[in-house]
Each structure stands twice: as structure tokens, then as C-alpha cells.
Amino acid sequence: MPTTRYFDRAGQLVSRPAWETLSGRCGYGHVALDAVVVAGTGVQVHTFWTGMTSDDTGSHGRPLIFRTMVHGLRRGLLTWGWTDVRAAAAGHTAVLSWVLGDGPIPMPQPSPRSAGTVLPVRPVPPCDAPREDAGIAGQVTNRHGILKQRRCES
Figure 1 (spheres, one colour):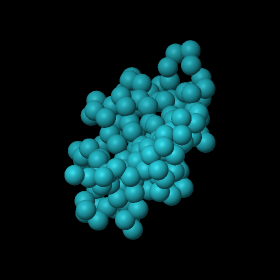
Figure 2 (cartoon, helix red, strand yellow; figure 1 turned 135 degrees about the vertical axis):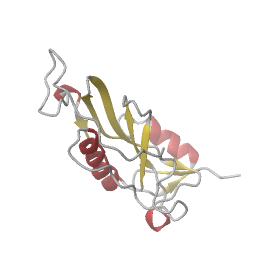
Figure 3 (cartoon, one colour; figure 1 turned 60 degrees about the vertical axis):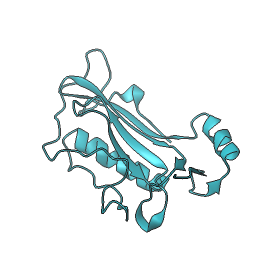
Figure 4 (cartoon, one colour; figure 1 turned 180 degrees about the vertical axis):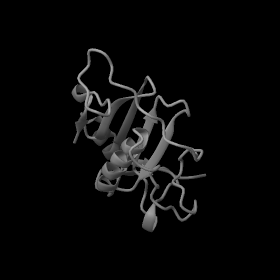
């Protein structure tokens, strides 16, 4: 049975009570959040710190303690894992670019157990990225339909 391990944002092993304290801090887990319109549907790309793992490891055996999730695409929930905040921020940007049709599907950090697929990533069928529509009426958006008032990064 896997053992759950807990980490702070810097990737340092911490006790469960310390992790619970960190998790309770407002904004501690936040990395980035973007709300966009893709094919007439609202889509959110959210990257955050989980600080816990059972078996997931990325490159060099480091734990995947950050996640990027895409909500709202017709493919269901899509998830990528990252080992540190810099990789998570870069991964968020790459995932957002893919969602908007501006880049290729992001490659996850390699995991020795998964031969290059981050766990628990849901497999993404190879196909073109969805296209965006014009922004939401009455909302301030940029050329990609990102709702500027909803954009926030740490």
C-alpha cells in the first residue's frame, strides 16, 4: 500500500500537520488561473500546489506536487503534474497555449515509472487543439478570450 508523503512549495518533506497548516494559508497553493472561451464554452486552466503524493515522481525522482487541470473541454478533465513551482508556471503557460490553439500539447515532465507520461495524467487523444471563440459578451477579454479580471498569478 502506498504511503502518502507531504511537501511544502519548495519540495521539502514536511509532516502532515505542517502540510495542513500550509494548505490552510490563503493563496499558498495558487500558481495560476485562466478562464477562456473555447468553441463557445468557458474553459478554466488552473495550476496549483497539492503538496502531497503517494507514488507520483517526475524527473530525477522528485515528487509531482503541483497540478495543472483543464476544466470545461469536451474531453473531460485533463491533468498534468509538475515537480516544482517554476515547472508548474511554465507548464500552465504551455497548457493555456495549447487550449487556445497557439501551441502543441504540452509534454509532461518525464516519470521513470511511466516512460514519459506524468501520472495521474489522463491520456489525451492526438488531435488538434480546440479553437477559441470571441470573448464573452460584456466581459473584458484579450485577443484569446482570457477574462482579464479573472486572471491571477502568484
